[in-house]
Image 1: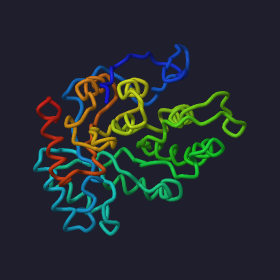
Image 2: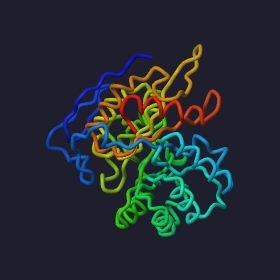
Image 3: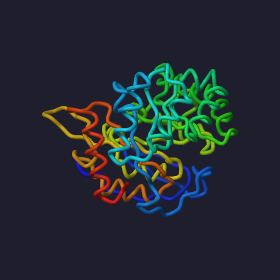
Length: 304
């Protein structure tokens, strides 16, 4: 795994030629929602993605115990994802408040975002959470004929969420970097990555991105380049590392694998990023140990 260099790009419209991204001045700015300023280490708060410990959050007792363990590691913020469906939002908020954890992001069901938007907004009001996350687009949209239907379907919920003072956040995996051929159905005159369709199809006030470092690298892309391209639209970022075993890629605690995290974190300081959230979908050993290792490594580098 090669280290990824950081490259700078100016604001404006983005065109891709091969693996190279070119930004043109005079295009519509990606930033109409978050003002980008040079940020320091203290401006980004470290948090834990509860999906990492999802097996331990399926009832209220386990959820409470797990949140206390996360707080004891040193984390002060948390993303709520894949917890037990019977745990009411009021109790989620009470438990996190008691543990000293601020809820800063969720991953919410795609159908609830689409069909139950108002109730979902009210639940996030209870949680005290501004960012409503979508973990991935449903499968049907991931084709050249259907990709623009995603924008058509989710734009109205995104507008309702924005009107409530919140922001819909899209979390990437690797498939969003697949190039889809241009065709009459999507209106593109060249192959475009799914991420490009999303960036151009939603205004910055309608959708932000929870950029995931591991999945960007797994797609064969430059993490720092994408941090720069999305710098005004990434208030939340997922941090996880990549290691290898034979020919297989493995998820690893932050700074325990091969991604160039000193460069990644430095690049994030020059963006709209507020929350750097540790997520490890699969762990080689205890997920609690993985979260603790990631926190300790980040804290040692000055990120808490």
